[in-house]
Length: 413
Image 1: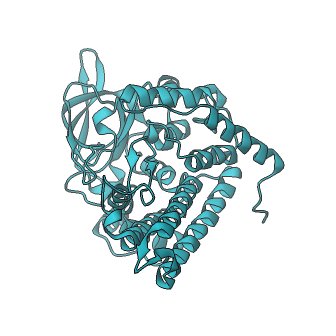
Image 2: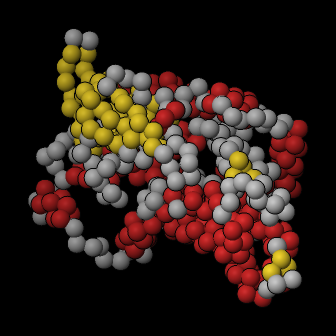
């Protein structure tokens, strides 16, 4: 295996680096400014690069998209505001949507004309997504056929600003739970949709709970067929779990370097913290773990270069990077002490001096709080372990009542 980038790829990287140096994003304090920044990135050819040309992409290699993501992370450049639309909705539509759905929605995802959210989780479902209770019933009206939706979703990322969402709802309550779910495109401005922002531990409100009261969805907004929702959801989650690993590596490397710099200025008993052998050992372990993640990212990139979609093995990388991020942030607080817990008043030599992927200012404390979310979104760590055990390692499955119901429905097969 050759782990070096080709001369052409390095030349491409240099062009991207120079472009970011010449085009700083400027202030990103409002939604309009963040949408405009994504539009700038798109017009520069750096958004949706691997998507088909007929839908606004460039048919670029996954490696080129990875290089752009790495350079954005290296330069602490904020990413696109429409992260869910670009990361999971667009690829899912390209794979499973009708031609009309692609023509109607994909360009708006690329340009941030329409922000998208993901309407999956429910209050009573926990990590058992297939137990969802939101219902979609097909009915006839004077102006056509619709699915009428009633129910509730929660922990909806970007819900407070979303124009559209991909919705999982139960269309058949009389079959085993995984078989009765369908996948819809929902206009978030439809009558009967109520969005309530949720205040997070970080102080921001990127999440929301969403309520549906007799919301009408046109029948042409179903993706795939009735009852195919669970299958399509796995496609979506595969993109969410497996993407942008190399960009995560670059951001972790940048944060590690910043922590090393801070440790050289932080005094402990008259000596720099970096001189403490225990601190050095722990920092060294984290450097190694980030390097392991880099190789995992290269493995995913190799699969994408061969035209393979993310599969169950993406859970290995998702579990690793989310748990590693928690260890990384624990180490920051352990080493920096109170300086790692402050939001303001941190000496510049010890501060993170970075931004979040969406352009907000970031601190060590913010990173610590946000790292807890990684072990929950896109499937909790416990769910990832089940997937790895059952689908990757082919270990015996845990007994579950719904599996017995599926077997019975298939005539005992």
